[in-house]
Amino acid sequence: MKTLILTLLLTVINLSMSWAEDGAVTPESNKTAIDLVQAHADYVWTLVAAALVFFMQAGFALVEAGFTRAKNAVNIMMKNLMDFSVGSLAFWAIGFGLMFGVSKSGWLGTSGFFLSDFSPDGDPWVLAFWMFQVVFAATAATIVSGAMAERTRFVGYLIYSVFISALIYPVFGSWAWGSLYHGNGWLEGLGFIDFAGSTVVHSVGGWAALAGTIVLGPRLGKYLKNGGIKPILGHNIPLAALGVFILWLGWFGFNPGSTTSASKDIAMIFVNTNLAAAAGAVLAMFTSWIKFGKPDVGMSLNGALAGLVAITAGCANVSPTSSIIIGAIAGIIVVFAVVMFDRIKVDDPVGAISVHGVNGAWGTLAAGIFNMGGTTGKIIGVQLLGIAACFVWTFTAAYILFKIIDMTIGLRVSAEEEAKGLDLVEHAGNSYPDFEVSSYSQQ
Amino acid sequence: MKKIEAIIKPFKLDEVKDALNDIGVTGMTISEVKGFGRQRGHKEIYRGAEYQVDFIPKIKIDVVVDSSMEDKVVSIISEKANTGKIGDGKIFVSTLDKVIRIRTGETGKDAI
Image 1 (cartoon, rainbow over the protein chains, first blue to last red):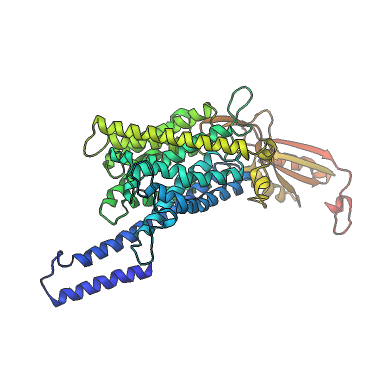
Image 2 (cartoon, rainbow over the protein chains, first blue to last red; image 1 turned 60 degrees about the vertical axis):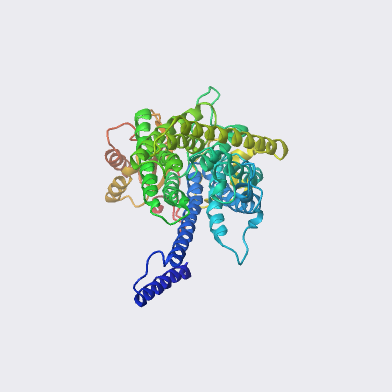
């Protein structure tokens, strides 16, 4: 980093010295130097943005820990640490090649496995690009952790982590984003708009979470014998809120960083990202206030995330005003979606399916509707096709994966283990040994 | 000797403690407890689903005094812990057989 800044400074100094020597310098005559500065700025911006997106892992970990019980907090931390770590290796070995390798068919990349496109004396751009992409892959992977929290066997989750980062995420990604590097996806060929991944990242995570949650079934004690819902309280709402703030911050890398170049475009993307999140939080708050009588903190936090997910697709091609509308609608949708999934017994402790799956789809549709260059039936049609393709591929692949894990090594812990808590039975650990247990229910 | 157990609203603790100090009560033990009486808990909402909270947090004060202090202590607690609203709590008084100070082995009134 320091060397990079120094290099930039030296370049600037060299430039000013050369100006002093001969007066007739034009942007054209200095093109090489200007391009070099631009290239360095592109590297810096892309890698700084990658670091911000990496920090979203912390956000997810805290949101999930906060919205679940203390007896499973070690397990949540381990899942979040490992889906990133295992996922990084899987994406390095296989995922990146499938997603961004040369693709003749438009359905799958076939080169660049094990980062083989990098050679020590070659262009290091592939490294900057890989770093930015691996944190995206990890975002999709970690979304699932929250929805499947408090009842999933750890080893089953590890296996899932390999497959989503090596296969499920990269295959769909290659359809929509392959041409960002060496690939060429059929969906992007049709004009599909998903700038930073409402569908590619968030819906993939959300629909995989839906599949996992269905295969698992609800947590013990969540549904009463008479069909009523007994909420299972999260153990630390301030932690969940801190997680949401961290995610919001990380999104300033996620969306504006998706330019992967230092350009003036990032200003509007930044503003759009922020406005959508704000509108999502405000509207989710009012919706919960009207619906439940009080401004609900969990729903408002989900609302901010819903706004962020929804603006991710269109952040570079809709206006700031449209961003507010997109975020606001996301904030309303997320409250109804959370309640709806609860009613149909899809037990998602953190609202991941509603936030990432449902609002990823809404955001992708909205990117077509609110397109600044105008919209047509064809644009909307392609957006809908992309949304549907993502659901069919991801849900099917993830459902089969989770079913196979369930039938072979088992996806869910036993009822007794679930009651004791995953920290103890899976990790022989305890998140808060100095605190007393205050919840005695048998769940 | 009497043992006086009072279940009170948590935010009333300081007032009750100071008032008991003022009348010469030299010690007390408190615990954080949960329970319900005729108030029967209250409703809360979590992520859109309503649920019943049966056990409401209270503070329990244990005070041991000479029998001559009983009426004074009871009336101070009744006065200071009273808000007039439901859930103010209860006072239980019982006779105590024996008190021992561990450090010195003193018993009875001297040990209080």
